[in-house]
Image 1 (spheres, helix red, strand yellow):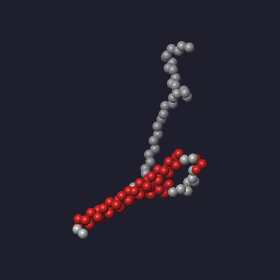
Image 2 (spheres, helix red, strand yellow):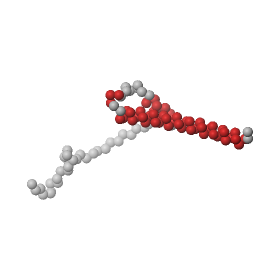
Image 3 (tube, rainbow, N blue to C red):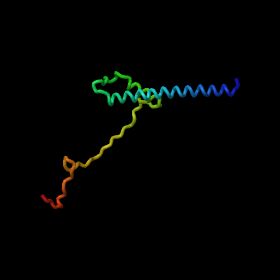
Image 4 (tube, rainbow, N blue to C red):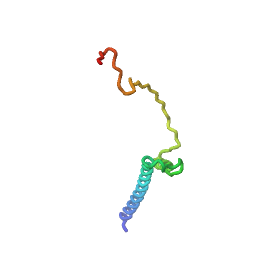
Length: 103
């Protein structure tokens, strides 16, 4: 066998491993999507107790595959704001006093 053929076979084997890894990652993502859909849209009587399923472990595994460390605590910021209240409960604003009223 020539040197060129062995190089191509090695490259092909590397690509096959890469494809297999991507397929596994895709299957994991599809499984997570299906589990989230079931949690969101499934019957409420079928909800599992916390920690009973594998979903939380899958999320941690996905984070670790992406290089994220779930143990790190991100810094948090606290935002405060004031909101103006609307005039009436029905959403209409009060009629200004300077306008003429007709009944």
